[in-house]
Amino acid sequence: MSRRHKSIKRFSAPDPKYNSELVAKVIRTIMKGGKKTTAERIVYGAIDELGEKTGEDPIQVLDTAIGNMKPKVEVKSRRVGGTTYQVPVEIRPARQLAMALRWMLQYAGGRRGTPMPKAVAAELLDAYKGEGNVIKKRDDTHRMAQANKAFAHYAW
Image (cartoon, rainbow, N blue to C red; front, side, top):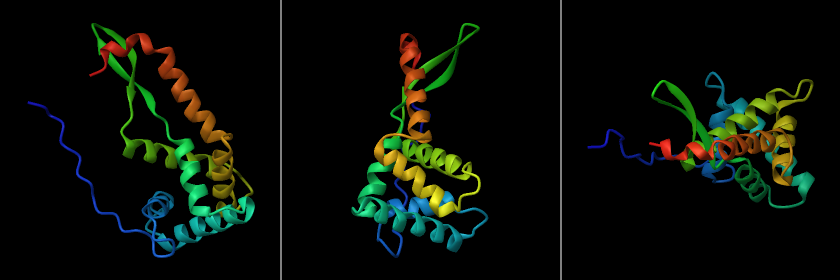
């Protein structure tokens, strides 16, 4: 009998402005201390800036950028016979999104001297183009999994 629970899709209300669940998820990720209005201001400002800089539909740009940021595989430590192996495992879609948004927030916050909406927009624009800090982090994660492919048979 498996100990893993089946994942339950929780209801997620779309945001009021764009009627998008993805935008609502980004807002919830950026929100700190329950300050949803501040998080909305940051995200909507970033989306507006994306639209201005690309001249395309900002929600499409956001979707593509986040899709580019998502890692497909990661390594997890697995202890076998006194030795710890880094075992590559595929990542569930919900975790892929969570990791991508976490990394984006981390690198946007690291851009000192830049207002947060502009920093988030810059990270998303870089990811849309396939470059930047988040893409480098994703590639490093993939490279680590590729290097440890020999231990894939230890995956559980």
